[in-house]
Amino acid sequence: WFYNVYTSQCVVYDKWLMWEPTTTMAQVLKEVPGHLKPRYTYFPDFASKDRSSWDNPVNHLLSEATEEDFVVFKLDLDHEPTELGILRQILEEPEVLKRIDQFYFEHHIDMEVMRDSWAPSKTTQKESIELFTQLRKAGVAAHSWV
Image (tube, helix red, strand yellow):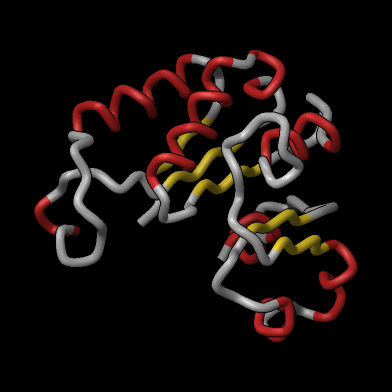
C-alpha cells in the first residue's frame, strides 16, 4: 500500500526499516517486488521503547535519516506500552520530530466498533485525538491507521 501510494506521487523510497516479530523474512520478501528487496532491512523481533536499545526504531531514525529526507513512520506494534513509549519519545524529542514527515499510527483505543479486534484499552478517542493534534502542531502529518 505505501509503495503504491507514494510512488504514484513520485516519491521513491531509499530504505525500508521494519520490525515484525510474527513474520519471517522469507514471508516479507515474498510480497516485495524484486527491485525493492535491496532497500529492505527487516528485524524479526519486537521493537523496543528502550532508548538504549538498537531495537528502538527512534534510534535508527536518528542515526539514518536527516531532516532533508522524506520519512514515513508507521507505528503499529500491537503492544500499547511499547507504542506509547515510542510515541512519547517522538513527541518529546525535537530532533525526532524534525525527521518525520508522515506518521501513521494504529492507536488501539476504547472504541466500540473495534472491541472485537483490539485488546481492551483505557485510552479514549479524545486522548487519541489529542496525541494526533500534538504531532500535527509539531509539523508532522499524522494519520490514524486501522
